[in-house]
Length: 338
Ligand code: UDP
Ligand code: MG
View 1: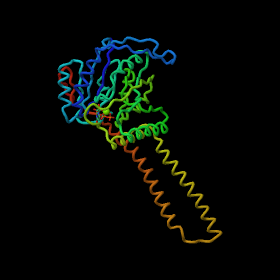
View 2: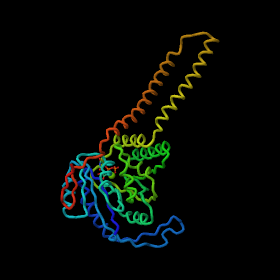
View 3: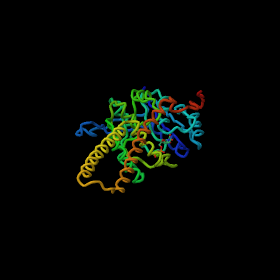
């Protein structure tokens, strides 16, 4: 019997956990008939395939990412009641990316479904993911065909970020694709072998490769509580995404430098000839100021970009673990990590 795990990072999700747990319990005993999809459009949904979730052994792995509310007590209670529940509790909040890694490190299943705790990810499409996985796809990702009640600005910013990242790096990034996905054991192993400390998992999914397949879903709204991500966090994540993925910004700095030097050289020749023909006049103070400020700005920008990378090097050479586990709870039994 194949074993599948749900990996659910939780940060202050007390209001969602019971609903989530009951949905998981209903799901793992459910049966569905899914239309048999095919890469060949003419064959789409020509017959139905019966899928029984009881054909699999299930594990619910929750990662408590330093919650300050009742998330941990609730999870502990669930693990006492239900042997399928495993809780990895981190010593503080390490962020979703590291929480996911903590979960992946702990998992030893044939495949894992990564899902948010706030019920934004419809569990109903998991059978379709499994269907594709059984047919040889190693990374079946959910593709948001609708992003739910996110603000217009956030949608816009997120899409332009994907576009920038896609242009800058040579690996295809997938817009509107998040962490909601089913990963085969192979992909999990590849992901856990990457130990960089400022993780941008969405990029790593693409980096590790493997056979990928998208499944459309409509993102629901958060059940309760509010999103842990604000604009600053998202902006930082975007910067992490770009600098962790590509060194192209460094090249932009070099290109800008070359371009400005070239222009300056042309301007120098122009001034030289002008002075030879018409003699010297002391004007152009505003131009001078503009040029100085412009170049100053450009230099600071380039320094900032270089600094961003040096910062990353600094963080990597410290070789700190990406997260620290406080305890792992299985069947109500606590295993303390040292
Ligand atoms: N999350 C986490 N650690 C954090 C922030 C979030 O484990 O520091 C979890 C959170 O509990 C949820 C998932 O990551 O299960 C997505 O978070 P959220 O809903 O806040 O983000 P959004 O859906 O707005 O991107
Ligand atoms: Mg959410």
